[in-house]
Length: 164
Image (cartoon, rainbow, N blue to C red; front, top):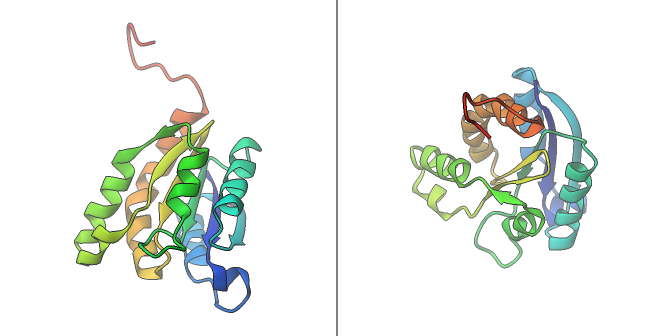
């Protein structure tokens, strides 16, 4: 099973002014699916603080997958995708497409998310919105992918004759 780290991005959550609902929900759903929750944190909507936490977890080998919640909308303070891209080595656009496609089954507002999915080293990083309903819907998409993604990122995989 994959080791999961959960990063909540919220000015008010980081200040203790708002209860974090998305982060605990991600952790609960991941644990219920058999994954280990390796780390959790809350940071404000500050690009460098988000990027710093993502780098620390990925470069430190803390988790196979980092799932963020919050900061993916259209307001000027929503900088999670930019922070995520700033630490990325490779993008995984299919995950972002799948998240939006799934979300559109529930609400047209899913089209307004700017979340991305990337890799850094052997870690997959995926942005989910902050809304707990959207988190639950996003986890429906992610949970079946996590083990295989972690295995692929963990090391060489034989894909058959002639594979390089």
